[in-house]
Each structure stands twice: as C-alpha cells, then as structure tokens.
Amino acid sequence: MDNKSDIRDFLATRRARLTPQQAGLPDFGGTRRVPGLRREEVALLAGVSVDYYVRLERGNLSGVSEGVLEALVRALQLDETERAHLFDLARTANSSINARRRPTASRVRPGVLRLLDSISAPAWVRNGRMDVLAANQLGRALYSQVFESPLSPPNTARFCFLDPRAVDFWPEWKQIAHDTVATLRAEAGRNPYDKGLTDLIGELSTRSEEFRTRWAAHDVHQHRSGTKRMNHPVVGELDLNYEALQMVTDEGLTLLVYGAEPASKSAQGLALLASWAATEALAAASTDLTVDLA
View 1 (tube, helix red, strand yellow):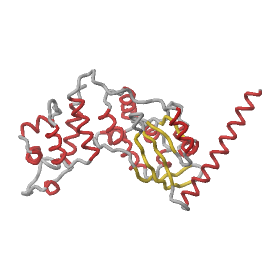
View 2 (cartoon, rainbow, N blue to C red):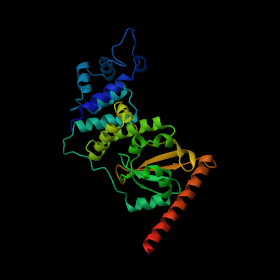
View 3 (spheres, one colour):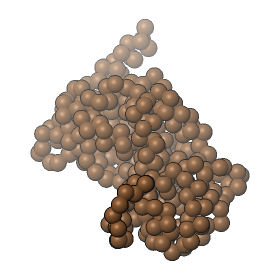
View 4 (cartoon, one colour):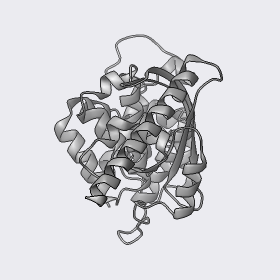
C-alpha cells in the first residue's frame, strides 16, 4: 500500500508545530519562511543528513531503521501515541500488499456479553473504527441517541459529525470531535487495509467540513482514561470518568466503562438513568409479549 502522502503530511505537521526555542536551537531572528522547524534543523536534531531527511519527509520510509525512527521521535518530540503512529506508517511502507492485518473485529464473544451484563456501570465494546458492537442496558441508555441510528452497528464517529444532536449531547463537542478524528487517524495507521474504515473516513470527509479540517491536521490519539461531560436528553448533565481497556484476547476491541464520583449529582443522574432504562426495557418486553400473543 502506498502511504507516502500520510507519511509526508504527518512529518510535516509535526515539524511545523515545533519552534527552534522548543527544540533547544538558537533563533537568530529574521523572517522564517516556514512555520516551525526547517528540514535542516530536524536533520541536525535527528543526526541524519539533510538529503536523507528530505527523502523521509517526502514519504519514503523504505528500509528506514528503528534507530532512525527513534531519532525522529526525539527530534520532533513525539508523544507515545505519535511514536506508535510513526512506526505503524513505517511498517506499512515496508510491507507487501499481502502482509495485511486481520480484518477489524465486528463480533463480540458470548463471554464478553455476559461480562458486560454483569457490570453495574455504563459499559460497551467498540472496535477501532468506533463501531459500538455491544453494550449493557445502562450503556445503551447513556448513548440512546447513538443507538437510534438506522445503520448497524451504531458508530460514535458518525454520530459526532453527522447528527446535529451531538453538539448538545457533548457540551465539549470540539474536544470530542478532535479526539474522535485523532482516534480514527491512529487506527488508519495501524490498519490501513480496513475497507470499512476507509469507507467511513470517505463518508465523513464528504459530508462534514468539520471532519475534513480536523483530518488534515494528522493528529493521533488513543482513548485510555479521562472524563467526559454529557447532556443526556432524559437525566440532564453528567460528568463521568471513563476507562478504556484493550481486550488482549480480542485484538482491536476496546471495553469502555463509565462511572461517576460517589454521592455526586452525576451519580444520582446515573441512578435515575438506570431506573429509566429498566422501565423502558419492561415496556418493550410487554409490547413484544402482546405482539406474540396476538
């Protein structure tokens, strides 16, 4: 797979964000024709020739050594996620078309489904392209608007950029939008042969200018833990902590669990949401029973 444009743009955007002062280089003043560091300055910091670095930034990582990649990580001050992304790009550049990763997971094992149902907090499982593959009752209630999508499986990235309710649901929508795009960008580096992911990115790029702008930034992100503020249509504002756990047995799947500080307003909101979800489930079961009897 030819990923030269991704390599070129990633290195160029990382270089553009660093100033000489941040890199520990002297700034002799004057007008700089490019934002951030010059190519020769990155080459100096990485300990490679200017010509070689120019070749790398043109997207040619063929045959590049791990030592050179680590030198670029240090020179461009990449964080852990950006480092992993650079190595993913290099791996793709040096692999044959047949050296493909396994298809993105789209099913959840019965044992994982039982685990979800045993968790008393909102919990769900998603794959790398942000398809929600399974959720417990409280997880479905928390993300009820996402699950209303006519497309299956529901997808949080599609909801974020194509559903106007997302801006109200996430009061800090701009940060959510940034993290969503950066998560998809990191997944595209890990799994460049995933047609479903490519189709999703194409759809979002075509239909959302907000997505296109953020996609061009080449930022990468991994969900691990943090907080999210949500404005649920039934119980109102919730401030929730989350943990994202990579599922070792099921490569590519992530278990997300949300919770609230004990005795907080958000904890009360989750309790109310659980009651609402149980009532909705009973009403649905009653409706199904009536239909069956008829």
